[in-house]
Image (cartoon, rainbow, N blue to C red):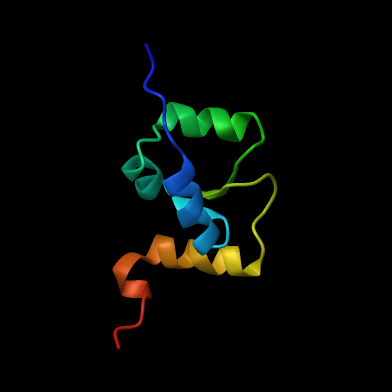
Length: 81
């Protein structure tokens, strides 16, 4: 039997990040590699970069790509005020 995932938290996060989430963020919301692969294969999500996903078909816009850069760069890509 499969565990049913409630994607609302992850999708809310994606909305704040212009539709982009990292693999780690998806895992943190109980979405596994197989589920992500299925979403990409079905065309519902797209890969922005290895380990970074756009939660819509096609390429993310400029702001989504900027978010992808922040997610790839990790803590060192964010300013420390």
